[in-house]
Amino acid sequence: MAPYFIKSRRGKNLLVNKGFIYSKHSKNKDRTYWVCLRKPECYTRATTTEDPLRVVNEGEHVHAPDPAGIAARAAIEHMKEAGAGADWVVRAWAGVQAPERPSVHIIDQEMHRLGDGVVARLPLRPAMKKAVNRARGKRLPANPKSIHELGELPPEFRNTLGGDPFVVYDSYDDLGDSDSDDEGE
Image (cartoon, helix red, strand yellow):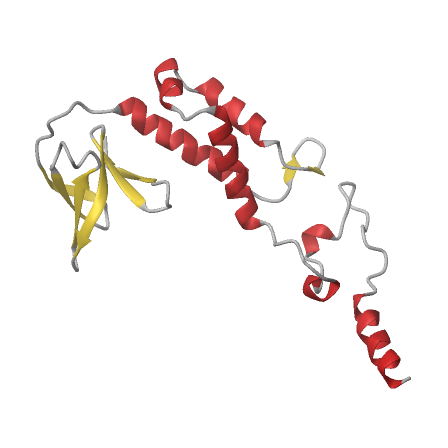
């Protein structure tokens, strides 16, 4: 199987090759050096080139490959991506917009497609729910503390699920004019 990348908990690339996971150690102009993720017990290094991604040199590990651990990491990454997806999911059969699925539905759907060995390696359900919600929260705008912080509404928040305008009249521009009139009195 060809080497590929998965994301770490902090969003960095981890190299996966032959059932082993490597974290990036260093890079020069044409090669990247990786060290086994189980570094205290295994000091195996791998060297890759880019375009296309290819492992040039890899040492011997002192532990067995961990395909269940890799699948668990990939599943968590997939759950986070599903949670942080688009603001609205378009239903193809009706052409109607629907709100996002709850994070527990995303987790349940992912867990049903995984094997028992992989499910055993996943974190507890509340931790996964928190991770999905955190990924979802990163893409939403912050709650404004005042009307002046709100500014103009983004387009995705201007229509209802049926496509009708949610805001019929936006008085935000009028608010600035009324403040200046009050100061003159």
